Length: 198
Image (cartoon, rainbow, N blue to C red; front, side):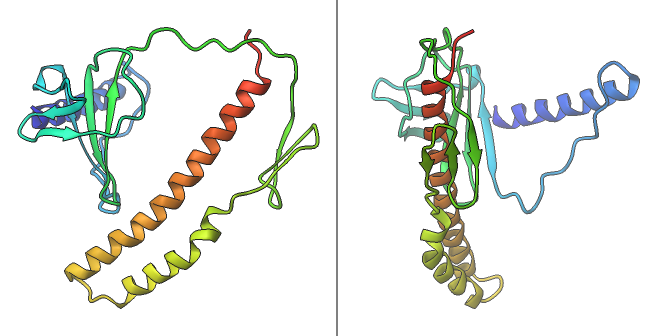
């Protein structure tokens, strides 16, 4: 089923490209090969692929079995497709396509604030508040330096080189995750404090 889905994606990409040449749709380039530098891998399970969520909150996949999942939120409806993604740090993520109900309505508020992003502080607000930059990369520099040094000493083509590469990738992924989490939390805080419903 997964291979058939991959074939359908390729067919849709070529169909879109040739339709753009005929003028049936906006101009598009030809399908591109996957980059050798992008080590992410993904497979997609459609509704008739035999996957489901078990009563014990595990994800049952065909030819894999029951997989324990750390859920980030509850499902608003039954997912139509599930995409499994393996990133370059060797971590697995499951992405679900679901039909959400209504959007969350925020209560109207009167204050508004201007935000200036800077180097000394992460942000300076028009009401005088200053938000310090967490400097996630600076804090992780020692660990990253050590991991990079170990990687540079490994023999080319060895298994130890691959292990060291994963260690470096995981260290960088940890920094990226911390940054994204900080940005999401801060932006949601600003939205709830200063946005109006129109």
